[in-house]
Amino acid sequence: MIRNPIAFAPYLIALAAVIGGLLSYAGDKEVGISTQPAAIGGDFALVDQTGAPRTAEDYRGQYLLVYFGFTYCPDVCPTTLAVISGALERLGPAGARLTPIFVSVDPARDTPAVLKTYLAGFGPRFVGLTGSDAAIDAIKKEYRVYAVRAPLDGGGYTMTHSNTLYLMGPNGKFITHFDETLGPEKLADALRKYL
Image 1 (cartoon, rainbow, N blue to C red):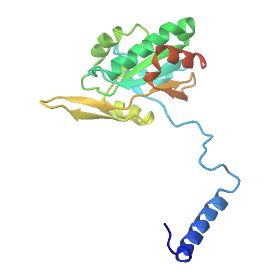
Image 2 (image 1 turned 90 degrees about the vertical axis):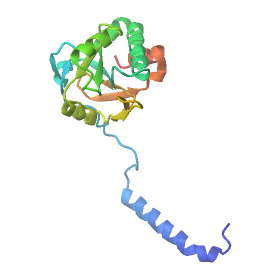
Image 3 (image 1 turned 60 degrees about the vertical axis):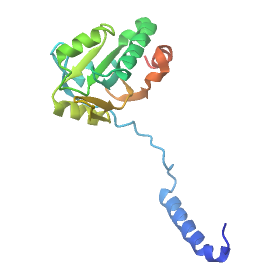
Image 4 (image 1 turned 180 degrees about the horizontal axis):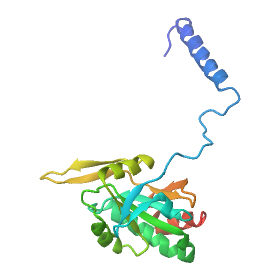
Protein backbone atom coordinates (compact mmCIF):
# COMPACT_ATOMS: atom_id res chain seq x y z
CA MET A 1 0.00 0.00 0.00
CA ILE A 2 1.35 3.43 -0.95
CA ARG A 3 1.23 5.67 2.12
CA ASN A 4 2.38 8.86 0.43
CA PRO A 5 1.17 9.12 -3.21
CA ILE A 6 2.96 12.43 -3.71
CA ALA A 7 6.33 10.88 -2.86
CA PHE A 8 5.63 8.14 -5.43
CA ALA A 9 4.74 10.60 -8.24
CA PRO A 10 8.30 11.05 -9.63
CA TYR A 11 8.53 7.29 -10.21
CA LEU A 12 5.25 7.29 -12.13
CA ILE A 13 6.40 10.19 -14.30
CA ALA A 14 9.68 8.42 -15.08
CA LEU A 15 7.85 5.19 -15.96
CA ALA A 16 5.44 7.08 -18.25
CA ALA A 17 8.40 8.71 -20.01
CA VAL A 18 10.09 5.36 -20.63
CA ILE A 19 6.87 3.80 -21.98
CA GLY A 20 6.22 6.82 -24.16
CA GLY A 21 9.74 6.66 -25.53
CA LEU A 22 9.37 2.98 -26.37
CA LEU A 23 6.05 3.59 -28.11
CA SER A 24 7.42 6.49 -30.14
CA TYR A 25 10.46 4.37 -31.07
CA ALA A 26 8.18 1.59 -32.33
CA GLY A 27 6.32 4.07 -34.55
CA ASP A 28 3.82 2.41 -36.86
CA LYS A 29 5.40 -1.02 -36.58
CA GLU A 30 3.80 -3.85 -34.63
CA VAL A 31 5.89 -4.57 -31.57
CA GLY A 32 6.85 -8.16 -30.71
CA ILE A 33 5.47 -9.75 -33.88
CA SER A 34 7.84 -11.29 -36.40
CA THR A 35 6.76 -11.83 -39.98
CA GLN A 36 10.01 -13.57 -40.87
CA PRO A 37 10.17 -17.39 -41.04
CA ALA A 38 11.88 -19.06 -38.09
CA ALA A 39 15.61 -19.54 -38.59
CA ILE A 40 15.50 -23.31 -38.12
CA GLY A 41 17.18 -25.83 -40.37
CA GLY A 42 19.95 -25.59 -42.89
CA ASP A 43 22.52 -27.63 -44.70
CA PHE A 44 24.32 -30.59 -43.16
CA ALA A 45 26.92 -33.20 -44.06
CA LEU A 46 26.15 -36.50 -42.33
CA VAL A 47 25.94 -40.21 -43.15
CA ASP A 48 22.82 -42.36 -43.16
CA GLN A 49 22.28 -45.82 -41.69
CA THR A 50 23.77 -47.44 -44.80
CA GLY A 51 26.96 -45.38 -44.51
CA ALA A 52 26.06 -43.18 -47.51
CA PRO A 53 26.91 -39.47 -47.25
CA ARG A 54 23.84 -37.23 -47.01
CA THR A 55 23.25 -33.49 -47.26
CA ALA A 56 20.10 -31.39 -47.10
CA GLU A 57 20.12 -31.20 -50.91
CA ASP A 58 19.43 -34.96 -51.09
CA TYR A 59 15.96 -34.31 -49.69
CA ARG A 60 14.85 -31.31 -51.73
CA GLY A 61 11.35 -31.83 -53.10
CA GLN A 62 10.29 -33.85 -50.04
CA TYR A 63 8.67 -32.90 -46.78
CA LEU A 64 10.84 -33.92 -43.85
CA LEU A 65 9.81 -34.73 -40.30
CA VAL A 66 13.09 -34.32 -38.42
CA TYR A 67 13.65 -35.63 -34.91
CA PHE A 68 16.80 -35.56 -32.77
CA GLY A 69 17.45 -38.39 -30.30
CA PHE A 70 19.69 -41.35 -29.52
CA THR A 71 19.37 -45.11 -29.68
CA TYR A 72 20.24 -45.72 -26.02
CA CYS A 73 17.28 -43.60 -24.94
CA PRO A 74 15.10 -45.74 -22.65
CA ASP A 75 11.72 -44.11 -23.23
CA VAL A 76 11.19 -40.74 -24.93
CA CYS A 77 12.95 -41.46 -28.24
CA PRO A 78 11.35 -44.85 -28.94
CA THR A 79 7.96 -43.46 -27.93
CA THR A 80 8.37 -40.52 -30.31
CA LEU A 81 9.50 -42.75 -33.19
CA ALA A 82 6.51 -45.03 -32.59
CA VAL A 83 4.21 -41.99 -32.77
CA ILE A 84 5.80 -40.98 -36.10
CA SER A 85 5.48 -44.54 -37.40
CA GLY A 86 1.80 -44.65 -36.40
CA ALA A 87 1.15 -41.28 -38.04
CA LEU A 88 2.74 -42.48 -41.30
CA GLU A 89 0.47 -45.54 -41.32
CA ARG A 90 -2.58 -43.32 -40.85
CA LEU A 91 -1.48 -40.96 -43.63
CA GLY A 92 -1.55 -43.75 -46.21
CA PRO A 93 -0.53 -42.64 -49.73
CA ALA A 94 -0.31 -38.98 -48.66
CA GLY A 95 2.57 -39.98 -46.40
CA ALA A 96 4.70 -40.91 -49.43
CA ARG A 97 5.63 -37.22 -49.70
CA LEU A 98 7.10 -37.24 -46.19
CA THR A 99 10.49 -38.61 -45.11
CA PRO A 100 10.99 -39.18 -41.37
CA ILE A 101 14.56 -38.41 -40.33
CA PHE A 102 16.14 -39.42 -37.02
CA VAL A 103 19.32 -37.46 -36.26
CA SER A 104 21.51 -38.93 -33.53
CA VAL A 105 22.77 -36.60 -30.81
CA ASP A 106 25.06 -39.41 -29.59
CA PRO A 107 27.42 -40.06 -32.51
CA ALA A 108 29.97 -41.83 -30.29
CA ARG A 109 27.59 -44.78 -29.89
CA ASP A 110 25.17 -44.33 -32.78
CA THR A 111 27.13 -45.65 -35.73
CA PRO A 112 25.37 -46.26 -39.05
CA ALA A 113 25.09 -49.98 -38.23
CA VAL A 114 23.52 -49.24 -34.83
CA LEU A 115 21.05 -46.81 -36.43
CA LYS A 116 20.13 -49.37 -39.10
CA THR A 117 19.25 -52.04 -36.53
CA TYR A 118 17.44 -49.58 -34.26
CA LEU A 119 15.30 -47.92 -36.94
CA ALA A 120 14.28 -51.23 -38.52
CA GLY A 121 11.91 -51.63 -35.58
CA PHE A 122 9.96 -48.52 -36.61
CA GLY A 123 9.53 -49.20 -40.30
CA PRO A 124 11.45 -49.01 -43.57
CA ARG A 125 10.73 -45.33 -44.23
CA PHE A 126 13.02 -43.92 -41.54
CA VAL A 127 16.34 -42.34 -42.41
CA GLY A 128 18.93 -42.31 -39.63
CA LEU A 129 21.70 -39.72 -39.72
CA THR A 130 24.93 -39.57 -37.74
CA GLY A 131 28.42 -38.18 -38.18
CA SER A 132 31.37 -36.65 -36.41
CA ASP A 133 30.92 -34.64 -33.22
CA ALA A 134 31.55 -31.47 -35.21
CA ALA A 135 28.96 -32.40 -37.87
CA ILE A 136 26.35 -33.23 -35.21
CA ASP A 137 27.12 -29.99 -33.35
CA ALA A 138 26.60 -28.08 -36.60
CA ILE A 139 23.16 -29.56 -37.32
CA LYS A 140 22.13 -29.14 -33.68
CA LYS A 141 22.97 -25.45 -34.03
CA GLU A 142 21.01 -25.17 -37.29
CA TYR A 143 17.90 -26.69 -35.67
CA ARG A 144 18.34 -24.97 -32.28
CA VAL A 145 18.54 -28.37 -30.56
CA TYR A 146 19.65 -28.77 -26.98
CA ALA A 147 21.58 -31.99 -26.27
CA VAL A 148 24.28 -32.69 -23.66
CA ARG A 149 25.82 -35.73 -22.02
CA ALA A 150 24.59 -36.47 -18.50
CA PRO A 151 26.68 -38.87 -16.38
CA LEU A 152 24.94 -41.87 -14.83
CA ASP A 153 25.54 -43.22 -11.35
CA GLY A 154 27.90 -46.16 -11.63
CA GLY A 155 29.44 -44.94 -14.89
CA GLY A 156 28.38 -44.33 -18.43
CA TYR A 157 26.13 -41.54 -19.61
CA THR A 158 22.80 -40.67 -21.09
CA MET A 159 21.80 -37.71 -23.24
CA THR A 160 19.58 -34.90 -22.07
CA HIS A 161 17.98 -33.36 -25.14
CA SER A 162 15.07 -31.34 -26.46
CA ASN A 163 12.13 -33.30 -27.83
CA THR A 164 10.65 -31.58 -30.89
CA LEU A 165 9.49 -32.78 -34.30
CA TYR A 166 10.40 -30.33 -37.07
CA LEU A 167 8.36 -30.25 -40.28
CA MET A 168 10.50 -28.98 -43.15
CA GLY A 169 9.10 -28.10 -46.57
CA PRO A 170 10.21 -29.37 -49.98
CA ASN A 171 12.34 -26.22 -50.30
CA GLY A 172 14.19 -27.08 -47.07
CA LYS A 173 12.53 -24.31 -45.08
CA PHE A 174 10.99 -24.75 -41.64
CA ILE A 175 7.18 -24.97 -41.66
CA THR A 176 6.18 -25.82 -38.09
CA HIS A 177 6.96 -28.08 -35.15
CA PHE A 178 5.06 -30.71 -33.21
CA ASP A 179 5.24 -32.48 -29.87
CA GLU A 180 5.06 -36.27 -29.71
CA THR A 181 2.35 -36.02 -27.06
CA LEU A 182 -0.09 -35.39 -29.92
CA GLY A 183 -0.15 -39.14 -30.51
CA PRO A 184 -0.23 -40.83 -33.93
CA GLU A 185 -3.78 -39.87 -34.93
CA LYS A 186 -3.52 -36.16 -34.13
CA LEU A 187 -0.04 -35.96 -35.62
CA ALA A 188 -1.33 -37.54 -38.85
CA ASP A 189 -4.21 -35.05 -38.93
CA ALA A 190 -1.82 -32.13 -38.40
CA LEU A 191 0.59 -33.34 -41.09
CA ARG A 192 -2.19 -33.96 -43.60
CA LYS A 193 -2.89 -30.22 -43.70
CA TYR A 194 0.56 -29.62 -45.18
CA LEU A 195 1.08 -32.60 -47.48
